[in-house]
Image 1: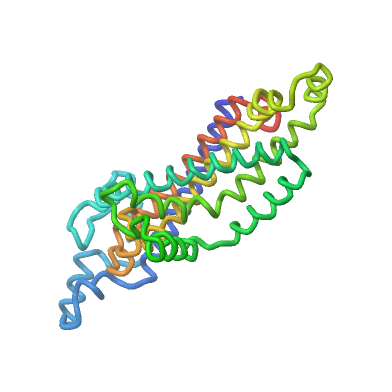
Image 2: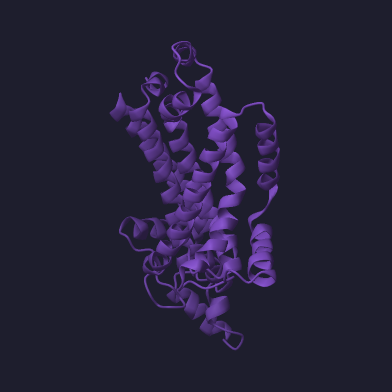
Length: 308
């Protein structure tokens, strides 16, 4: 059953990935031809046509898309027009910086959300619980770029504690990490809290209370264990969301990741790099969801009933 489920999810993932590849090709062809940038204003029409022919842009769209797919299968993502390097090499140089930022933000947000959720459940329906739920909700509507600017104004300009840009010191990570982590805390907090409350209302928990087990022990020993499955799925979804959302935050803080790279690549019409970034992010997102589904299936036997 597990192999059949993994095979089915793998097939769905490949369809999604093909859709992402097709969209990346369509989008990069809508924003113009590389000769518009590479040629400059003084290039003649003949020189521009020769450059388009050299880059394959004299062919119809469908044959070009076919060649594009064949090249991808063989690992050829094209050459960056700006650096003259393999496009995937350019992306791989920036990807680790994005992963450092995204994983740091996800770890921070998960830790804060879990602590708040446990506190809220242990004091449920009390004054502290209601105040916490209302105050956390305020942060959910904050856009990343607005929060990033506010953090720079507060912690770099008004109170010069942290650098607003840079990459060579650990302190430079703090502000972009906060800008990415804070907006997702309310989402994680509500889901973690809901899962804990669901567990705390089960019959076996009532039986434990009747046997005299403390509320703290029930939360830490049984509540947290039963919320592992939803937490894994949520973490995978949030990680994909954060990678996509890193575009704005990296641009604001001049963080040298793929978010910053895609902005400069689009401005320069460096199509090969743009396409490589879209495909890498889509593949990463699809892989995370696939792994999360399989992990949940393995650690929670109850989910296997729905896949039979």
